Length: 150
Image (cartoon, rainbow, N blue to C red):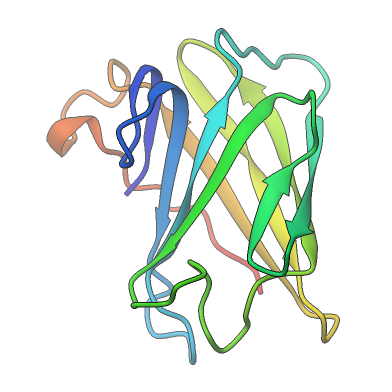
């Protein structure tokens, strides 16, 4: 379940422009439900060429977006009691990136990639309509059926 909210609140109560993504790996070994809340600069728009933002590991605890970028906050979550917000089997990625193919009033689309110390990667795609365009889905949530690559 995912949400695109141009002017709303994230799960942590901060107001802004948010893409809230949640993935269920449906039985993939070692993975549990996980996701990320991405806060963008107010009024964010991406059209034409994709925009990629680097994510770097800060203090081996979390990922942070490149300074002065389209992304203001990167808040991860998993369905465990992990203190870092990342599955304990993989740990915190050593880095990553998020690419936005489109961001406008109607939807946000793109992908993010986590890079791990052992050389493996996890790629998650998203294509999330605004609540107005997701009419008919419970609470404005939208089930993103894009495949996740690992």
